[in-house]
Amino acid sequence: YLDANNYILSTSTLSGECFSAGGFGPVTIDGYGLGYGFSNNMLGLICSSYSSHSNGKQFVQALEQAWDQIFEILEKKKE
Image (cartoon, rainbow, N blue to C red):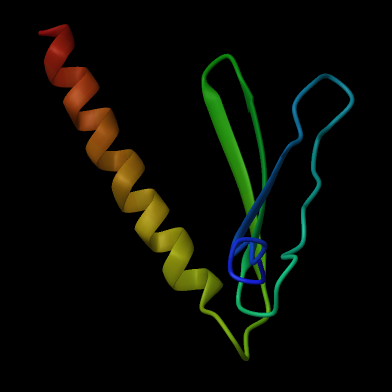
């Protein structure tokens, strides 16, 4: 039960005309909180974590790398 309820990744959408910024906190000491929003041609993300237990900067760098790879694949499909 404890393992099944250990949410390392906790997310929330912050989209809409009323949101220009925001965030979402981790719900476990070793987790990440991701607040994200999007509009026409933009995707924004705020990542929070407890620095003594996880590396938020490294997590964001991995996300950026994954999104760049996805973008490259989608651009190649357009050709």
